[in-house]
Image (cartoon, rainbow, N blue to C red; front, side, top):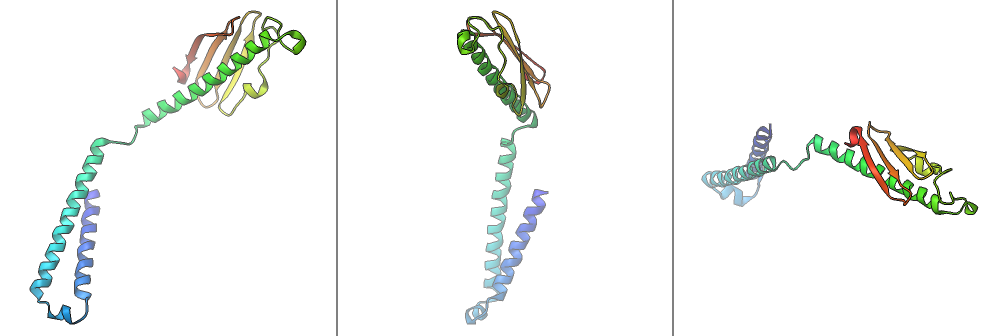
Length: 173
């Protein structure tokens, strides 16, 4: 199909050159011999053929390079980006839960334990994820559900505030 388009382009260039050479008016054009005009046209045709060969070589090179990503690579990148975003959201919630734990009860905190912690609603929901938690006295289990697929991520926040036991399921494997 590309070669047909190139041949069509080449033919239109030739027609344009013929019209240009034939349409030129004036005394100089009349004085030129038919042989000279034919020779000029043949040179223009040779340049056009060389340009066509150059274009075909460039097209072949680009096809060999295959610069466009494959759909599987795009999908994998999308899943990885979504997994990373959910992981960051869970880490932020883990940090928030630990801050709750170490805050005194008189200031609205847990006074040394996680009991009573709730995920702030702005952190629990976003455009892509829903995140819930199970609160225990000495730990919090945080689980995120991806709204655009079947991926989930889960971790446990221990009593020192570290995240551990990360598990990914579904599209996030």
